[in-house]
Amino acid sequence: MHQLLKLSCITSLLLVATAPCLFAQEEDDDEESKKVVPIDKRYETEISTLAKKPAVQSAFKIFTELEPQTKQDLITLTEIPSPPFKEAERSKKYAAMMKEAGADSVWIDEVNNVIAKRKGKSGKKTVVVEAHLDTVFPAGTDVKVKSKGDTLYAPGVGDDTRGLTAVLAVLKGLEKAKIETDADVLFVGAVGEEGLGDLRGVKHLLRQGGPKVDSYIAVDGHGIDGITHRGLGSHRYRITYKGPGGHSYGAFGIVNPHGALGKAIYYFTTEADKFTKEGVKTTYSVSVVGGGTSVNAIPYESWMEVDMRSESQEKLAGVDKLLQAAIQRALKEENAMKRRGPDLTVDVKLVGDRPSGRIEPTVPLVQRAMAVSKYLQATPRLSVGSTNANTPIAKGIPAVTIGSGGTGGGAHSLNEWWLNDKGVLGMQRILLTLLAEAGMAN
Image 1 (cartoon, rainbow, N blue to C red):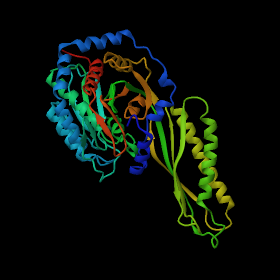
Image 2: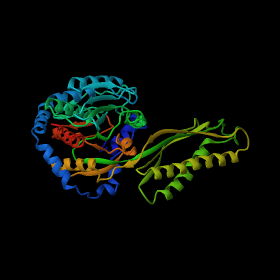
Image 3: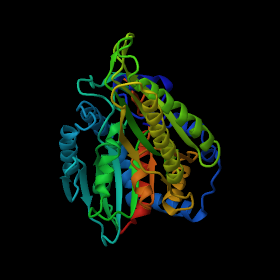
Image 4: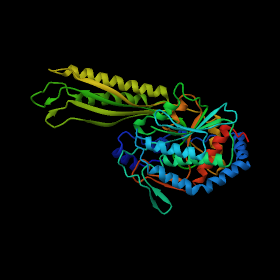
């Protein structure tokens, strides 16, 4: 999902109109992400000490030895279609892979999340390591992996199938190196991260009555430098004005849904422009509009899809309130203009609700993730984004999203690619971050 090109965003709209095109614009325009955040020396020492342990060095070696199998796992999973809301087949295969890797118990929950538990020595704490199972591509998309030199090409090969295989490899490394953690670890393949999936997999995982989670590491994107610690929340609506419709001349005087929609867009954008000029960056977009049948027919419906985003829940609620007011004002005014016939009605449907929040850079998990990047000779880069980490962040659970190593591009496009450029460092990064959070018991 990360590092998207404008072309990829356009292509994704052709594939799935509601798939989020994130990160490229989010990071480029975000001033806070450009700030230099110091790393506390104690975390640098902690990571360096962990990395030097014989068992950890053994795991690093195992990751390298596993590279051919990890590549095959990536091809196998990529070629199992996993469209939005249709992840079941990939879930079954991933669960089988987790069982074979040696997890203590593996199950598929009610929404098709795959959960593999590896028990810790004390089990007093639970750490989640997760990647998402779904892709943005609809059923019928050709997901056959093609190789050109060292580069793999296929829809979904990077976002987030590479993340799934990196998480799987870390489980294998822990087992083969016989590393015992103090905390319980849940290795998760989550459904519903993309588009109208609306983070449903993680929302279900962290539901009231679900497993208690103390720390959350999402794996999404590539590289070993990026760390998402701020959740970019979003509200998405489909608003539909409905009227009787009729001939443009013969039925003249009845309500016109397009008139209401036009007014609503004007009132909303005018007020939202003022509201978003100050404070935490908050955005709004009337992204898709439609309706009408012919130039000589008054439409029976007019609709639009609206996207609003902010890492501040208060600002997100504020711009949402402006939208609701604009919708009702336009409805009232259009109905007041009619000369005959029934009133116009409006249907307001919330189609996306991603929570906002942030974990401060001083929180141990963020510091540890930064220290790991530095240890691996990368420059840590903090960012805001809409990922599966949004939900735990909003619930006050320390959470970050980190990449899985290697490099890639074209996410959300048919030309998506991933290159194993020192990809093994991705597994080292996940392992070190996990062990710092879960603790080594041996």
